[in-house]
Length: 170
Image (cartoon, rainbow, N blue to C red; front, side, top):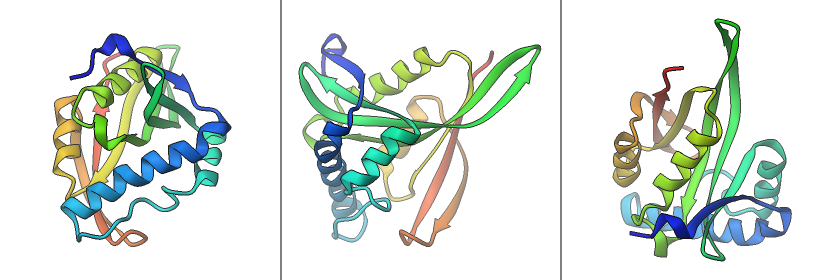
């Protein structure tokens, strides 16, 4: 495990895009090679620095730092808003989370999700999806309190995606 005192989330900058794309590519490629068909791959444009720049502009994109090193990222996007008893509450989607292969399963992903939860106390729901073959990711989401809400075939990537949701009582 990594000492969480050595972890932090920082807003990603456009100059980080090439490094972020490289970490993302390696992370997803390893998952595909190990658990799917032995071939590298990932979500559409996962390895394109321009996609990462676009995501930095459109969503909330934070790099996961271990000491002074970028070891991954968490990307969320606003998907909805409701008003309950005069208070605005928000539905966020966890678009992507990826961790450098050398730092997987050491607590960085859990730290990132918990940090997002602290930063957005008005969040009533967090949704995400992961490939059905990614048993480690499925265990990760379940351990953090996410519930499976469905599964569908993704034509673009030719894989089944398991949908997850975590609800917050507010």
